[in-house]
Length: 419
Image (tube, rainbow, N blue to C red):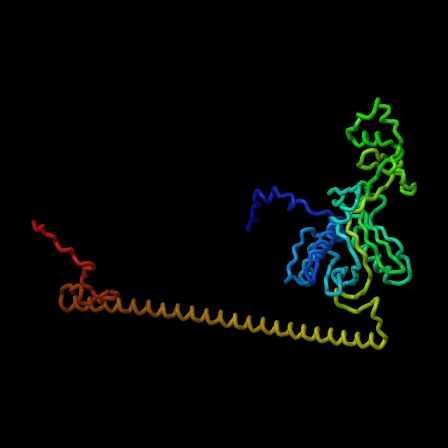
């Protein structure tokens, strides 16, 4: 059997013919959505955090009330999703849960305070927002996560695994246009989440030359000569505060104007938002349901831990028993279904054989009756010596009783003119 021919639209579809690169498939992907009580702030915060996680996130994810966690887990492997970021809202406050798919662990953070992206941008005097910055993943910067406690190492490794790794030998510096800064406060045990846009500016150039380098049209109305425009002070009052620690020597040429290889440039950060203040509350071993490895406020004794572990094992055994029983019942139903199917097919075959046998008997009887009629006619010829009448030995089969023709409508009476 030959293969089905492809249509013109299928042949011209580039998405079907070209597969994804291996580095894009292996990069960590994420789902960002919210659960719990409704509210405008949690919806806006979810959208802002989804923007932070771009491009390796489902930016147009549609979540309904009837969707469960199992629904997201079932499609996660197909879409190469490795993490889930769930914002929840209760009567006590808002929380953020970071889940590693498919088997955990799960980190639960309490959100003490937050500022949306629109509020952060509207507060800034200089705003730098462009869509090209969100075409590549952000750079992650961790500060003060080297303290005591395994929970800090777990937080650091979780956030690091949520973003693709950077190869210093092959990285293109022009693609690094955003950064996420996480600062841990040892006194309050909170984490400050900040999101910035990165801009690289050449150092040692006057403001006029910078405009010429950036292909901007300068305003020469206040200058007597072009030399006056070029010999202005190298920095304005607002730019004079640049720290020398922010000056770097570029190892490669950047896509922005004036940033050549082996030249000195200054790195500037422009906040994009959102701002979030987090505190780790709980660490679970499984996916939203497992052994509690760490809790900030509740501390269990060894006896209580053993009792909880015993209850969890009993619950797990009961679940496995029910699952095994369900599998056995499923197999029994399949066997019964197969037996019923075979029995039905056997009955159909038997009925077909009986119908064929009845047809054969009916055919033989008709042939026998025709043969008997021929014998009677021959006997009449031999004894009488003449041909019998047509209706003498022929049996009328399949004839209907003749009916009289009945008029359906009465004939109209003839009208006579009285005049």
